[in-house]
Amino acid sequence: MKSSTKDKIKGTMREAKGKVKEEAGRATGNRDMQDRGIAEKAGGKIQRKVGDVKKVFGK
Image (cartoon, rainbow, N blue to C red; front, top):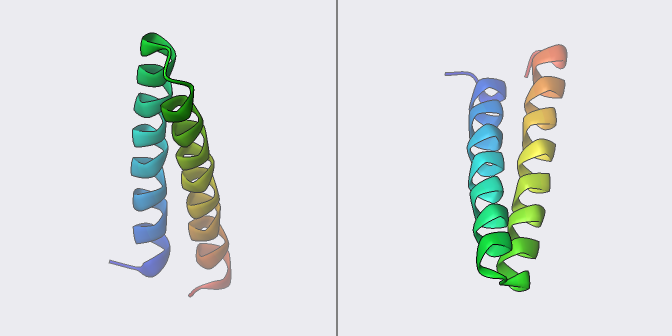
């Protein structure tokens, strides 16, 4: 599997995990967990974009 595809898959998984943490934190009133979820979701988006860029440049 290409590096770009791996980054896109891992990024999507991180986004999903972050969304779950964010929603769980919101539901329980745990602001710290909600913030960690938001940060993880953002990291996943960045990782997905890195995969897109690698694909464009053929790496």
